Length: 285
Image (cartoon, rainbow, N blue to C red; front, top):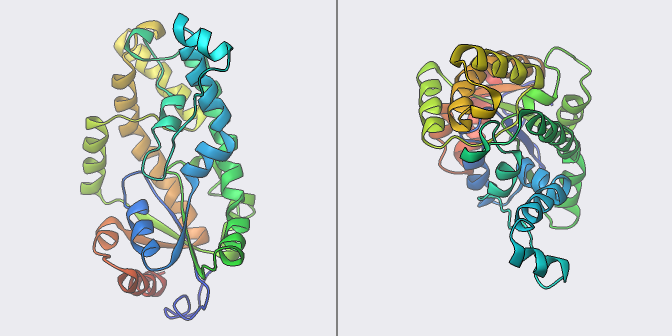
């Protein structure tokens, strides 16, 4: 959905925006701002963790509980219930399931099991993105929302082909939504890396990229797969991920939509600011 004039998006009676970019650039912050002004907030990570990976997450919890004789007995007799309390603001159940590869004594999981879970996430993310159109319709039909914001996962660029003009996920999104990329600047890149260093969270990676990082890390450190510190590895991989994803994001924005900077997004305080920003990015394209 591209516009002939900067005012084109604002003139719509029903607006839809898909925001993408690295985790931490401000996607969910914008979603929370406009949600207060009557926009429907579609969180892709929430959809992944509830609709598509909910059973995997709960089964993982049960597997851990079965290691306790007390909990095993209660589970086998249906005396207790184990569930995932995932929310928009707390996606920890999904992150915990994805896990980190490495030493199990430090919370890691075997690398091939990690890859298996990564593949599950890929399929779930594609499905959740392809659900966007139906959620736009549901938001209007069921809840009466005129405006819709899709808050994507930071790994969107890994499940689409930025160079393919016929990519099915991006074609579907662009058919009914303004596509907005939030770009990190050089100083923000270091800020994101430092933030991740403080709280290294599991995430989805392109499999070829991930396998390359794993092989390189083992070679550089001399560690065996069984002895890798999980947090040390994903901190190391994250800085490479920033460089890997940047060109993919920019390719998507160039083909399908518009670009705003982290600084511009940080300056948005309400819906009016957001609509003003859409005019700026449309004029700049």
